[in-house]
Amino acid sequence: MRLFWRNCKGMALNPGALIARVAQSVFVSLLSISLFYGIGRDQNKAQELVNSIFFTCIAQLALYETATVMEFQTERNVFVRENASKLYTSLAYFSSKVALELPLLFIFPLLENVMIFWAIGYRDGSFWQFLLVYVLTAQIGTSIGYFISSIFDNMMSAA
Image 1 (tube, rainbow, N blue to C red):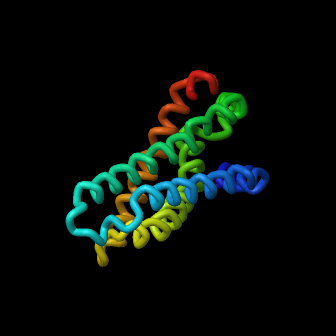
Image 2: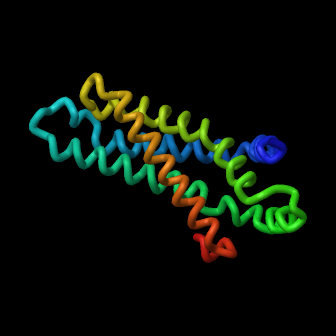
Image 3: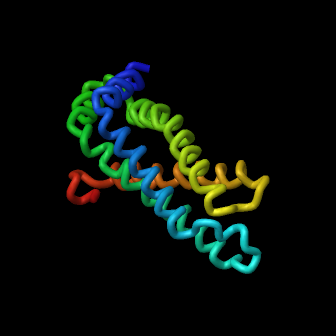
């Protein structure tokens, strides 16, 4: 529990990182809208609709992967020292990181989905399915970022 509150304090002390993530989400949404605005309303543009779904999912994956790829690198020295002192386990550390990230992994995809869903013109009634795919894609991107961050020793290798 202390790790969770320490991570919350770290996030509160660095609001720029959170603002940057919001800005990235808005940018990717606006990029998707500018590329695919209104194509869902035309029944003859099924391929373009599939392209828009593919683009938004890949953009989501890359956005969340890059947001977390440096996560462990910045705290590596502190983690190694505290883990050697038996203050907590690796599972507790990772769980506290994920617990803090989970609300963001729902709120940001919701923000992006609300922005692009109707602008692109996806089928009415499929909002929640599309949001589910968006949230799961964000989870996968975050997991890939954490995995890459955990296997490299320094920031240059992870990037």
